[in-house]
Image 1: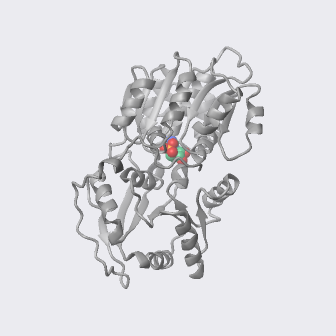
Image 2: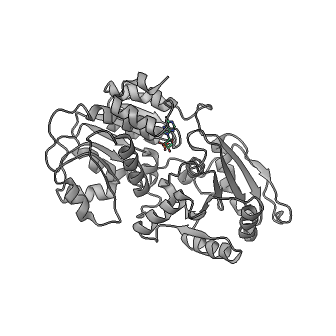
Image 3: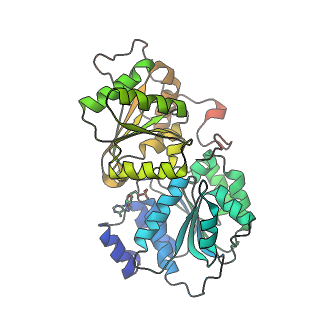
Amino acid sequence: MPFSKLGLSTPILQALSERAYQQPTPIQQQAIPAILAGKNLLAAAQTGTGKTASFVLPILQKLSKAQTPLRGKRIRVLILTPTRELAVQVEENIGHYAKHLEISSLAMVGGVDAEPQKQALIYGVDILVATPGRLLDMIHQRALHFDQLDTLVLDEADRMLDMGFIDDLEKILQRLPEQRQSLLFSATLSPQIKRLAKTTIENPLEINVASSSDNSPKIEQWLITVDKDKKSALLSQMIIDNNWQQALIFIQTKHGSAKLVSQLEKRGIQAEAFHSGRSQASRSKLLADFKSGEVQFVVATGIAARGIDIDELSRVVNYDLPDQADDYIHRIGRTGRAGAVGEAISFVSKDDFRNLCSIESRLGQLIERRVVEGLEPKKEVPISILNHRPKSNKGSGHYKPRNKVSH
Ligand code: AMP
């Protein structure tokens, strides 16, 4: 099915053809007509499936027909995202798709000066992409009002709950007009997400493309068993022996990331640390350099890296396995995007065994194990248990703030 059959106008189709999009992805085929028809949506789609365009394109189409002039400090569409990086990236996408339209957009995130954002709101903005914290600040400062709002998007809603934004979300939702179109996107439709949807979205149409094998990103996953103290040697060896050009490497702690960067440097490999201790400006620059290929290896803490979106990222490495099985799925979702094949490699030591079992149970499959000659583990990783259930407070999709930190 071509894009032209979905009811999008010429300026949008032109922008899509300039981006060389040939045809809509499955989520786009389902979501675009539904949103154009004014339906509320509860959509399960992971990053990499084309979910951003699936809501941005119909929103642009509707906005291009908007009749009433926008008043000052007003917005028509609010897109809420869990992280600054994701907000900036969604707004960038809007810029691409709205290239031939007169539609304004703004990313409003924390960690940067609020004044220019306030100024940008003065004459009103069609689409505001915001993280919950900064948005609430702006609401309290009476820098924006929602009486002209007609569409709400909750993007990566599961991450927002995971990151402890439920209270902020509720405060924001209370202020929005009841008459609105609401669209919720989440990697999984967990019971918590359904509960949130129930109170937020009236009678939504449910779309689920997450589990279909032909549109989920193609990711080759495997793991290497290795002793904990040999992980950095293993990483250097993998980079050098396989001539890796790029990798996003996930590590547990900020301290660990700095240490690993210096260990890699000692072996002649240039890498950069990406964590919440760095300023927003330096993180943005680092991401841009990584995207352009100037920086080849980024060592990121899981929390800081949640919103990273890099096209055609060929490889992620879990230097440490995450505590939450859902985080593993999000991490590997950073690769194999939009049809490209990606590789997700995990370094698993005996200490990672519990996390491995949770992840494999969540995936419903075992991850292929390999060893690297000369770095075989002395402390063996036991055989996996596929029906492992994490302890009640460590399960996936929990409600409690895990890391209510600034990113
Ligand atoms: P998302 O799932 O929104 O993070 O999108 C993943 C990637 O797919 C982004 O880099 C988009 O630019 C790209 N993309 C989205 N829709 C299409 C499409 N129909 N054809 C090709 N690439 C697409």
